[in-house]
Amino acid sequence: MYNHIVDSNNIIIDWETFHSRKMEGNSENLTYQHAEFKRRKRIYNKQSLLYDVPSNGNCLFWSVAIAFLMPVRNNNDLFRIRFIQLFGEENSNYLSMVQELFHNFELLNHNNNHSLFNSIISRYLIETVFRNRVVDYISFNLNRFRGENRATFSSAILADVRQLNPMDISDEQIIENYLNNIRLTGNWGGFI
Image (cartoon, rainbow, N blue to C red):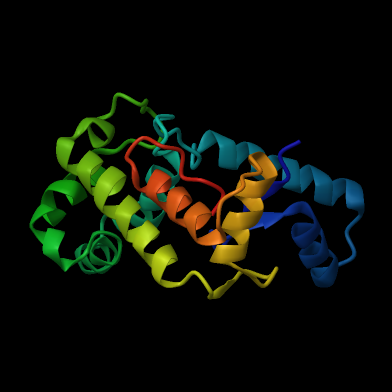
């Protein structure tokens, strides 16, 4: 069952959070709250805030880039800031073209044949530039703690690889192979 919706502040929340917020505000019965949750979920789904991305091994990078840039597509200053964060200042000459592709991206009526997904420039930026920037970040921060589980990138990579395919090679070689594999356009982005 789908258990998340977007609240009035455009924040994705789960049923328990929604329920506790409703309980804090008043003492309406649980049946009403669940009906309200389901109503909001239907509205959320009708607005098609969820969208498909190409399932070509680059879906992680497409999803992050679209989710990061789509909310600011109509604000030139914010779009520029986020564009540079994802793709670097050296690619800012593509900014207006990519912003135009995002302007034309229809949330309600689109498919994987949309010009955003077929543009050589947007594919290069997301599937090569952004992908490599992510791998570079991980490479330079292998021993940095990430998330609530306090695992480092290094320990997460080793755990994932050893779980899937126990190998008799050094930790350093496993990590290097893993990152080199993620760096290749079209290869699955991994668990990171």
